[in-house]
Image: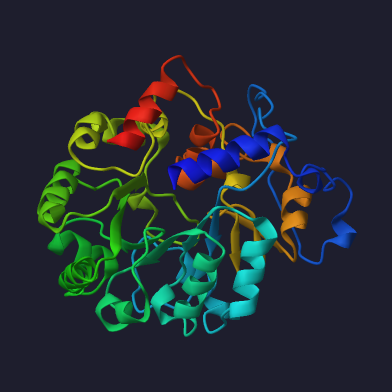
Length: 364
């Protein structure tokens, strides 16, 4: 996967698709069927232009076939933001069409709970036929019921959401028994030969020692990686006290290297530096586009100022220069991997030794 993505990045950096580099948002409101509202640049010192302006291309497609879910997690914005469309879902043809349209080498199937999607097995097969790398993001409750519909493949990961040990996780997802069901799903998938990773969201009250204990608890199951990232403060989530400022994130992630040395964290060393406040990265939201029942979500997975009918419209009509830290107040405390891991992968603000660190991380 790493070699394939590296080749994709080098190819597109040398020759970025020209149809995605136009900036046609100025004065085109009448031609856009969806209302796009953004706050414009934040007050303060002007921010430098994004170094990849004019060379935009996607790395990971966040594909949401549906937003229905069997849980109501405290920090989830999807089931609240898309409440009016909760019963809608994309067709298999729409899903694969979006994959072909943007061409990203990695597809994260999320939602909602993707194992509730009736055509999930067909979707995974279609993605593997296109040689895509897949993270099937699930709460784990339905793995035992559905894993037999898939064939193990080195390009397919069950990415299971776990926000702590049993008591903490069950409280976060607002239902008892979910942690144990997810663990049973992990064990069943690993016995069947599947790749399995975990995804943990860090909130203001998260105890990082408990996260380490969670990873130790999971060690006997020989998982294939752990994703760890700070929560984003969705405006649609009432309990805003659970989210962190940038300064909170820096404090929370101090010493993360110790975890990274023992456990396989699916986060580049550069992104971990960013989380600790050791370097600055620009937001590269177009690197992780989102497609769902409403269309191509603009500008990013976290903020919704509109939806576009085509990927080219998303890339060329979104006013990218108006978003990011120091530009839009809503972006002020965001440090999510979907905005900043693409910047790390693209080598933005690179320092001497980054390549060697990345190579060591890949080969660990």
